Length: 293
Image (cartoon, rainbow, N blue to C red):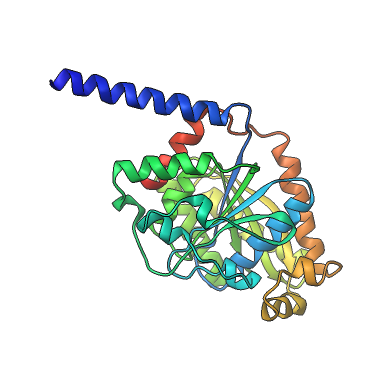
């Protein structure tokens, strides 16, 4: 009986993997995890506006609000979701039920209130959610907006992603926390391409100086190379758009901040052309399982 049960489980697993592989055939997906190390650096605003910019440039973007404690992607955009990622994890709602349309055609899976540990999900829940992720259609770029600070949930999403975008500001505390985040990624041996965006700067020179400070420290003590992808000017119209619950690239498309976001999007697209995207079942599915298991 034990052998029969074992063979049955193997057969079920084989069929499931065949189903997943069929779904993923010929699909290319790029996954970014956006993190900061500390709150208050404008990370979520960067995610929302970058998503819209990438969508305008031909990408099919999905934003996952993975901050289950202080989720606010929907707040920034003035959206009112009925189902959130929290409901998917805890109340067994489907991802498609949680999926909502955002500006310019981007897709959003909103977060939710209440802290949970994704490692508490059992095997059946892990498989269900992983398979639902890969069945989402018309998506080739995933931006994961994570919670501020350092947690094992954050590390799970970083393990899932291909690249990490670290958002910082020139403030010493923000740089210290960004370094701390990168150090934890290094200590956990999560081999990632780590890119840096410097937010709320007065000019390009300050942005480059800020990045160089962080890069020199990281290379000296952690032996990790960082990649600079751009900066965003401290623009009052960014705050105005937030107050209006809208994205500044929509409200003020000609602003300096919007031009900065456009430049970051162009840089990412240019780098993607030389990068290897996920195309096989094992790559994507294994990354998905790392979130939940």
